[in-house]
Image (tube, rainbow, N blue to C red; front, side, top):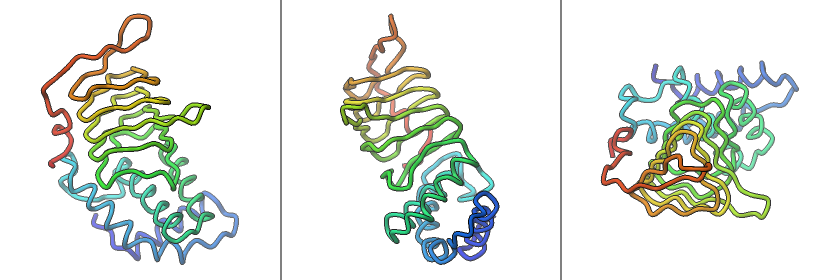
Length: 212
């Protein structure tokens, strides 16, 4: 399936009407934002090795990414926050993730599996990989993480607070990184008493996911 802007816009509008039948008219904003949102998702998907077929909304990871991009275009570019919020809620209802429309993700990213994914506002580098159950969050003191490019977060890993995750870091499943800086080119692994340990590596682990 290679969706065109008009039919896909109609599809999204029908979904919104079914999930949120409150009479809100989202059609104009969605139709106007659709070409740019499609351009962005096609560019993103073109870099993912597992998706050589291109963008297909039947793939949940792709469609979740697309709904985020569409909500971002509607909310940030068009300033239609009411429709953007409904698109965020639709994405949450369909895919079980928290990914608000005004959060800034890079041009190339990969959501492998959506359930339990929670992303707060932070600084995100390009070619980042999220698996199910990942959390990026701020603390009550207002500090937010910085995640550099080519980082892989495995299932149920967390990056919280005043953390800086340097380039080419791989965070192992279930590991929580809180107020901590990694040196880059490393694994972050489970350690004693719940504190992570860091081991260097020379692999470009991100290349398992992206073509370039």
